[in-house]
Image 1 (tube, rainbow, N blue to C red):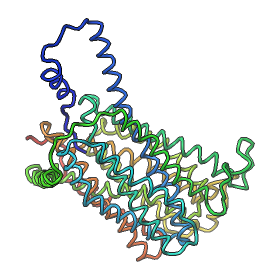
Image 2: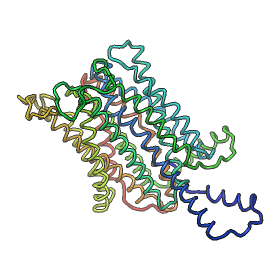
Image 3: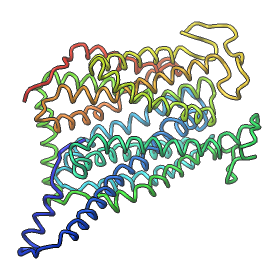
Image 4: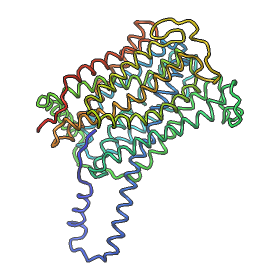
Length: 496
């Protein structure tokens, strides 16, 4: 994320003064006010359109990677939850490796070229066909089909990461510095809001009507649009929905959000200068050891948090045999706590400081993860307990005690992960040199990308090693390592 605040309005103003109107005529004050109002409306539209891009792109990650397609792929397409979790680890690890290799340099190159929207457009164009291909992921297909779907997932995941890099880089050029947080928060809220709408709609139209045991009067009598439940079309429809949603709601960004002017630098020069900038920025960390140590710690525990989001529902779906309805109900339920987590994280940060707040939230994730992998239909805290698979209430879903406990642990994940995101951002703002805050937030973004492949590959390896889905718990290594390193980080502002 490159927070370099500059220039578009100033460039336009100078161009008008020195080229178009060398001898400007006096303009009546009423016309000036009307012109200013029109410009303000235009800029606000551009800002909202920028934020709306999160509404467009977030459903892909939530629907495909977390709650719907990922668990469906591992359990039903592969047909073996353990092997499926391993394969999913390799797919996401490969996509993460590509992102880690290219994203920092692409961001720096885009800074040199100036324009960001062409890069976003290319990423979206790369994602949409790949997402649509996921519709053809049906159970029982040959290995060639599985490989095709895996490649499509890797391409879509890489494109998603690239859109984040270039979309973030647009922010400082379209909004004043004192409103960066406000517009960023609006985008985050829109992303969660759009996803929540889709989750609720799919729950009503596809998931609940597919359950023969449910006879609620307000539900459709059968799955809408004639989708075939036996071939899992109600699961697979998440891919076309994500692709069409991405296409439609990306359009306002391209139509209304102003882009930075092109610099005229050639592609070869941009590549050379961009790679040099990344290297020089990394070398600067030698002069800021405390900040560098924090970014390294954050790199580890952030990778662990992302892995929990990616594999937490895959683990539960395999262990408890959860279908689409359970996953969607849990998604809607956890979204509320994820929103609350941001508020809790901010309150805790103000109360005890960013470092202590991070220790609480990372430590909370460690404990919650340990409890999560200790829960199966017949065990609790790794201890077999008789009668655990007996229903404890009449609700159609989450009927056994282990399932209820896993839902509660997932609530902790939602709270602690969201809180940790808020705390980690605030921590850097507290310790980075004030005069170079922009550059260090660029490094902050880099630290969230360079190891995105480690956790998925760890999960894949340990799932194969142990022969069960408890291999998901291996990401505890990254969380604990980041947690321990935080004890050596000082919450002191570095001087330039």
